[in-house]
Length: 430
Ligand SMILES: *Cc1c(COP(=O)(O)O)cnc(C)c1O
Image (cartoon, rainbow, N blue to C red; front, side):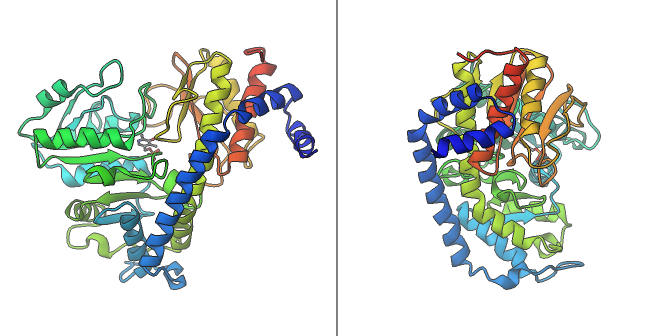
């Protein structure tokens, strides 16, 4: 009886029979959904494979370059592979881009000039962008450079407020920033199809508006990306989906060639652009991670859906809910109390392959406006394609759960989180 054998392993990890059995019940109901996820992963796997073959990726591209990094064909080909996969004219894929926030700052600051206006037609952007844009005053913000900002909130039902958007688009509106994932907000994540509708509308209002999509956590969740539906730029982090768990750091920008070129010039300098940037030996990890990314994303997605169904049945509000379609790998669970939020994160931490013995505590993270508790025991520091959970310590004490390099690990983490809630008497199994 294989099931009993694995149960014993789970028990050694500290899970009770009751929690294991409950998890199995939930999993049994998800076969159809998991099959659909596997089909998307299969499609995306071939998409990446084709791009690598077409651009004749070769082992010599994995060699380290140093210094200026001139003639780094490995770096150039990797950028061509990203561009090909995302059906974009060009891409900038660099370990020198520290994280997603910097990639977004780069894309915005490279393409907005003093007097221009940036519009967010989907409401408040991700927390760390508030200081980038200057919504919260900050040294070095776009606002300091004379770039203004306008926002159109989503309607209460999550749909686009087309009237408000049309009213917000003016002669100075140069760029729109569209966040695909909900981030720390409680609104639905946008499907690529909905992003396409929004872009079509924006272009109708102003044909030359540059539409940038914050694609963080969205890559490979669907068979299409925002660049397939009119996005001029997509931006993301390599320690999320596209790095496949292997990229040690980095970010990417893909889209229209002229806009990407400006980003490269902003990153290095005018006159140097994409021609420089030593890879220092990370190329193989970036290639291999991108190759694995469709499958890794699929595992994370299964984890998110499992968590949604498991916690939904226990009466916790979950976003997205257990049955709706997915457009990113984030799962939000409203845990209702600081105790529950901390217990959940402690469970995730205990399930980690690295630092499983430490206890996460809330702290004031740079870029966030309230203390945040984060659980992660990752091979790559802060990598959120690896099993991780975090949430701001403010009502309704929502935890944002994501990642897991394998579905089995994601499942273990979720069961551990539930175990903690049960042990502390916060929740009862039916
Ligand atoms: C992760 C993320 C970012 C960027 O965050 P970093 O931690 O700087 O990589 C931006 N937007 C969204 C929606 C994100 O999920």
